[in-house]
Amino acid sequence: MATFFLIGGGLIVILLIVGVFVSATSERALVEERLGKYLEEETPTKKGRESGTSALSEWVNKSVEKSSLGEKMARDLARADLKIKPGEYVSLFVISIIGCAFVAWIIGGRDLISPIIGAVIGFFLPRMYIRRQQSKRLIRFNEQLADMLNLMVNGLRAGYSTMQAMEAISKELPPPICDEFRRVVQEMQIGIPMERALTNLLRRIPSEDLDFVITAINVQREVGGNLAEILDVITYTIRERVRIKGEIRVLTAQVMVSGKILAFMPVALIGVLWFINKEYIMEFFNPERGICGYIALGAAGLLIIVGYFIMTRIANIEV
Image 1 (cartoon, rainbow, N blue to C red):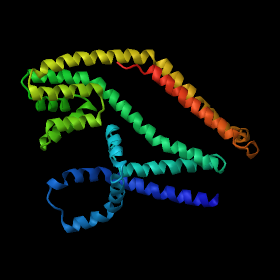
Image 2 (cartoon, rainbow, N blue to C red):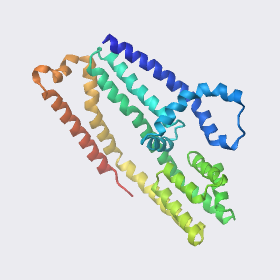
Image 3 (cartoon, rainbow, N blue to C red):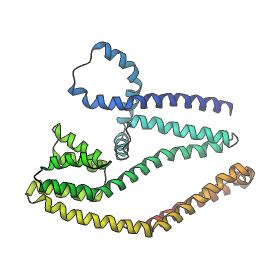
Image 4 (cartoon, rainbow, N blue to C red):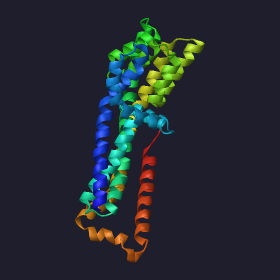
């Protein structure tokens, strides 16, 4: 166990240094990567100073981006509006696993099972955080979509072009919708077609209502028509959908909370008993009982997951 302690502690220190170093250079690296080809070449002295500090982060990022999961990670991070690269996310992901395993090993009496449980928790924590950020951002975007369409319709009726109306949206409305349309306008200003810029927006914001709006804009650009009237009808439809979704969310809140409590209560109870009366929990792993304890825990976990999935599906009413 002493060897595990030394190895785990050393890895945590190394990965923390890597994570802090990579995160500190992430914002500057993103800006330089996007604008570097439009700027004059740097002097050899400046390049020499910065090459050493960015070599490690570039190696990590390129190694991850070349993998099959790099594109998916980049898309998930963009949807969560996290200003980090896939390589930086992998570093933080590994830190989370090792850190949680190390903490669980210290708290749980320095046995073999505690770090395994901690590693499992550390594996899911970053993924849960990203999905929560994606969900919160998508909900905020959908709530602002009707106001965005109203502003866009008024701009088109006042004589604005579609791009000018989008620019007004990027200046007048609050985040996250203003940030996304500011990026759309910037992409069009550097020569990217509107269809592609809107497709990139939909890739970052996987909203069904936004897909409906983008389809209407693209069809109008192909066949013509009064875009203001089309978007006015869509605005009314989206407002009604948001209202109905809000009512459904209120009516199903009790079911969702009950499902989460019933799903996490056994896990929390096992965790509490693990620290209060560890001998009681260790009966599941008693060698004299064979694999019966493992089968019981596995069956209980499977039933909890199935029950939680069924309850969420019942409460998830599509509009």
